[in-house]
Length: 633
Image (cartoon, rainbow, N blue to C red; front, side, top):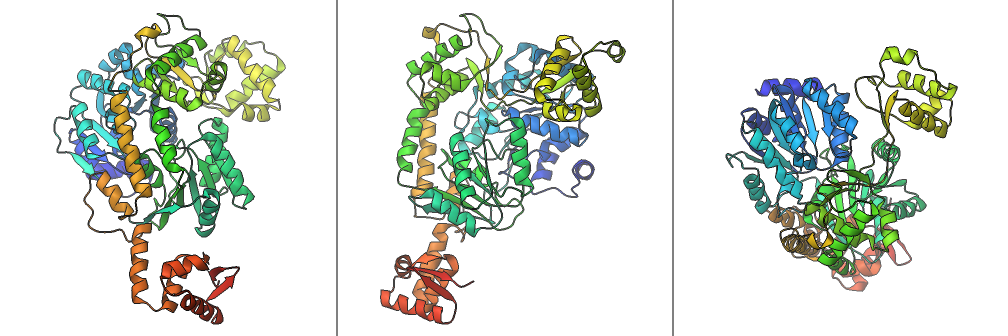
């Protein structure tokens, strides 16, 4: 079986061999066994189900929570000539029907579905009649109440298992504590717990460094200036992505901001600029990085503290996928403790507030009591907060709690691209009478995009406008005219969040937020915040060992590369070396350095340290200027 798997890998992906753990997971899946793969970020999770999908006779269903990631994977598979389709709440009724027809016609090997689809009785009935060979649960930690991103809709995966009991399950996650691993296998009703494959959470080429500073922007610029190569700076708000990108640009560092609110074109352009090294630094929220494979990231900086070690580890792990030396730097200030405390209260506003947000959202969308079931709406969150004078962070948390409680599904990062399908026959097109502009747009569509008669194609109005020598407004109006004439079905792009009502609207008094969603989740978040705070503020052990303990591994010794291990090495070296050698050693690790800090680190008499600095200056190994010592270039 392995030789066949390697053939498929070589034919479709161009690789001659699998990475560590991939082949073992594939062999387990192909043997029909329920399997759990714990593979850190960059470990190549998608290969472990995409290769078997091409080898198995039927369809592989992939349950994944992020629509943007789902669409990216489907696009990448299609580019490789692999038949894949995504079904999610963002599709129109017509798009959904076209996709189902393709699936029934046998034109699909991988079917990606969002978890809320599994609540739909019609979809479950549809699945009952399909030949399902494998069920994949991506981001499997979402099924666990102890996971950092629990989603109740994931519990519906059991329904697929009920209608397709012979199809094995492959569960995949990049980060899971031991209790989450147990919860995953229990909830997915694994026949056996013997098939759990783990890659170590230790990344030997990454140095994890914590830097305490009250001027994070200056420290960020200093670090980026010292570490060559591409970098990611993670922040926790959209506004800060643009602010810090401007700060870096002003310092002469080529940087751009990235967040979920950008248009699809802006996202693609900024991703490509960064991947092609036109942009050196991307300043991003956690919306950036999922599904983006850039192996040569040398530096990941967390300007703001993540709310959990799971998220920190995933984001930091986007550095050094090529195995070369890389750095993950966490910037910490005194005020961060208070920020983390506020996060807990902001994430769990009072229940009455949550009920009030539910009612306001339904009124905002003009949904009457008893109506709204399985309806999808654009949801202008900014306007919603402005209209009701709401604090955005708490309002967003309330929507999340309502989503977890089964009332709605709030999709903030929806951001769909425009798409078109021709619904007339070719013969009918010849008899059309169109205005000059509309005729140009139709002809340009037919020349620019293949497959428009069979399926929906993503289009760019700006590209069509340029090729047709029209303005974008004229192009948009012509597309609308073609849609009104039933020549095409046109779905314009949207950058607004979407809201799916997963239950009919109920009276405010009947909105229930269960203990498992509120108190249990709040306690879990507090434990994760405490673990993150201990990692960031603690200085009594190797950073890597802290991560390994958290994820259930037993370390064999210090990493030798984190800030704690480096300090231990420095202190040991200080004791064994002369003052001159001690100063030379510190300068090799930190340059430039203030003379006062140099004296403190060497723990020697100030006069001896200054004499050593002068000696190094005399032999051109160091430069002293305004109280700061630097190594000579």
